[in-house]
Image 1: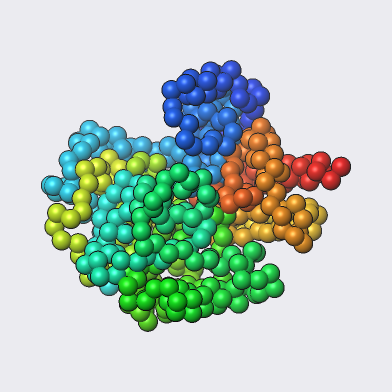
Image 2: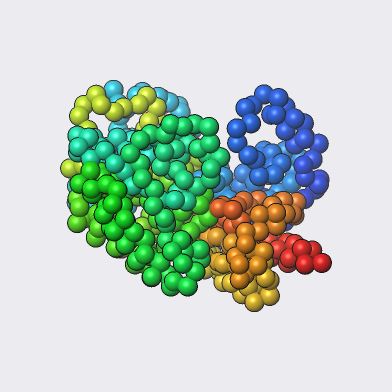
Length: 461
């Protein structure tokens, strides 16, 4: 069944560019923004949002865009879903805040019960609520070390990882140097190891995917545990099941089963960062399910509450055992965000969005893979569900990053009505709302491919 269309626009008229972007209203707002806001983040292009309609966004000048990034993998049930809007209104009329770490309310029990049903961790589980992805990671770091009463002070993370920008999570992040530049010293006792990036395996160009996975696991055992730190001092290994900022990198099939085996061997916790990959993005509730591996702790945020600030940590009950008074916050588990979160789970179930993510995602991947026979610029196509990376390279043999070309592709796609962004150094990051229709997906892919072909022709002139 195709996704139900709730919104007051005709999707057949999307995309629709009525004023060349950025239009006059957008330019005015951008100028004010630059004079008022600390510019410590990089915008992709001058898109100024007025409102959203499911998988479509409208700018302040009336242009309509196909949303191929979902507000950075947040709007999994689309913009302004009427059931989410109604839930927010209903809860706002009751009460908007009463700190759950000091008092009680029914919504938190309801949502936590629903979360426990969908997370791929067996047995008894506990939940802790946060405000964001980075806070979920910070909390998981405290839980991991606190569970061992700080007898295991080391944490393992991966090169290419993005876990957040606050000080604890920033110590785990190793995606781009700018994210850490000028902020040292970092939190100590964090060790980074290579991630099995099949297209660019850090242990050799000629390794198969499985050999690449085995090489990383061997490096952890033989070099980190054999020469740097005793595994009995490691509390946790933090990982993204698909690296997000690092380039939408999907590891080999053998990697997570092997990592689970090593963790069990030494009593180390596996912490699965599903902030970007979770809540149906990959066609399953959580991406780690594709590998059939159970983590000990899962962190989440982004898509959990349809754009409202909410995050959560779910872990085995015997691990979620920090003593009273050791960890809390004021706004985590906000009732309005939880009301939206309840509807997110219901909508994904009721509208079969996991199935739609797989169906549309398979189509998008196939289209880009077919173009590899015709376009030299496309080096690799990878992903699961609607978490898809299309890596652009200047030369397929050398795999030189196409950094200038990807900027052209993103900007020209925006000009033509597709809001899409990148990951890694030169990977197109495709992550639309899970209720995107096949019709809109086809239009967006047609535009992006046409732009890639244009950029490819121009660079070889």
